[in-house]
Image (cartoon, rainbow, N blue to C red; front, side, top):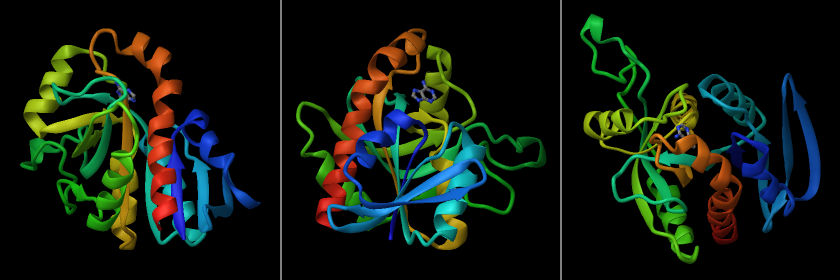
Length: 227
Ligand code: ADE
């Protein structure tokens, strides 16, 4: 069963509209919507913002029977060539706000864990194929970095690019990845660029988020149709 998470209502409501035979599963603070999307058994949920919400929701999804997970939503573009509307499919995810360097670990490295979590090859290929069907946007595979921070400064963008080779920055993907890895469950993160995480990011985000969230949703539907 495919688990689909978005951080916000806007990111998943377009998918919920297509859900058939819907049944609600209520967990503390989170509702999972189980049903069929394009003939495929799915669980869809709004996970909330940030890494803690993402980890908690992913755990519920896996407990309810998800055997693969797709995260869909928007992100701030970090790769210099990314523009609003473009799509990033995760090659891997990393937590850019983890800093245990004082104990000799690399920036982003959680002691005892991988520095980054690779997305599943098959899900990446499927997402890239589906993303190429979305008209008028560039599609790229790349590293998705996550932290409990809305990035809105050119210096931080430069830092994320130089330190981690990040394609885009968001607030949930690596937490989903970490939980999935613990469970041995494949995942991929699909992000549409709503802003370029610089000084104008807050204005761009508000303007473009509802529009570009559709792109990520189109990719997920392209995937479910192929599965
Ligand atoms: N999601 C969308 N834009 C973002 C940004 N600039 N920083 C973090 N998360 C985001």
